[in-house]
Length: 569
Image (cartoon, rainbow, N blue to C red):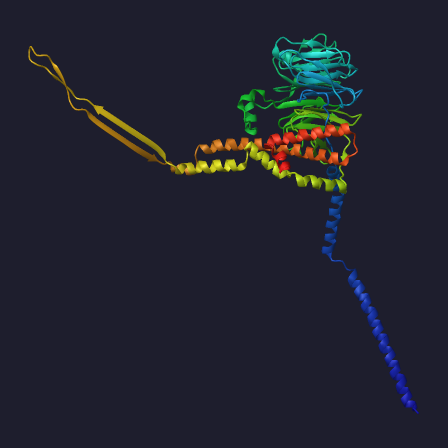
């Protein structure tokens, strides 16, 4: 039996145990709260990092749509010259009211298509030695009237190309060479530019008047708007108000010596043919000017010119401009490009073209089609960007093709070797020019001398005189001189010649690589089309196969038959 004292002790002890447990629980709760408070404190460095991450995500969100649009879509060009005999197409014109009707000029002929470029029919052939189609236009109010600027005058058709007559022939060969045409929107005024002057007509090309301000000047481009006239000449750009003709030069071409400091030309004989201003167009508000130094624009009637960025163009020299449906396309020696106003970058749209020698482009905004006249025929592409997608089966087929054919690097190297434009050639020239100083200049001398001694013996009065010939004196000398000019180890005149050759070789090599690369990938795309559309009409497949053979022959021509020989091996 426990005593009362023991019971009290046990009760006190149990109470102490409970209080100790309660204290420990309170300490645990307090510790948890402390940890929570400590966890709620955020490091300032983490806040800065969070701001940087949010800014980066915003930037990616802004740029991503542009990158996706550039990466997934492009124009795909296809040959569209069925019926055109000439390989070089120099002029194009799409009828705005009926975009199915397109006119093209090549060599000495004019062709017409009534099915948007699928088939072509010849409607005009120039006679005589003079040939060349420079420009094609139509009357804005009557599209049955077609005007063609040729090197043999201005030709006009009143019945959509059915019959033709020459409406302007000039006073000499330079005036006869018509380079450009422009017709006012109301069709009341027409201007033509020649290699020797500007001429105007107010009765639909029946009678012509000479503009005195441009006598003996070569006209490159003309544009007529509602209120202004613009004329592009060798020495600058002129404009005037349409109601009050008083020409004013608002763009001055640089002097020839200034051009030479910025441009390098490998052909000094063609200096007279060089021109800084190449083409010009106007819209409702602006005038665009294509020059050798980039693309410029100004508001109509204003003098303040602003440059459009050349980023993405690959070259500053712009040769042609096209504005359609608020989209701007330019033609350079590197291909066809479209300007993206949001990103201020030019996008290359030369995919599918087998040449970079593009003479003119035109488009139909109604049908969404763009045409390109080149030195290798006529090409057509859809203006609506086409998504590029290749299925797994197509990729496997492409791998099978690639395994049987050389890669692009091998083809490029074959083209470089065949054209003899390898960089190793210049390296060898430089090394040889330096080692040349180690070799002496050799001078060889040879001297041979023969002397004869003749004496006169005068005899007596009755004796004749005698000539006495003594022995011959013969001598033979020779020598070799060696000389060195050790200063040529540091510099010699051959270095300057090698620098010129190096620059020319780089230009030629770039042209060869551009050409063979375009041909190579155009051929690859055509091979992919043939594999994808195995159930295509036999006639279309036959034409594509013929085109494939043509591309193969073009590559073989640039590589010395490398592609065909590789397939045989």
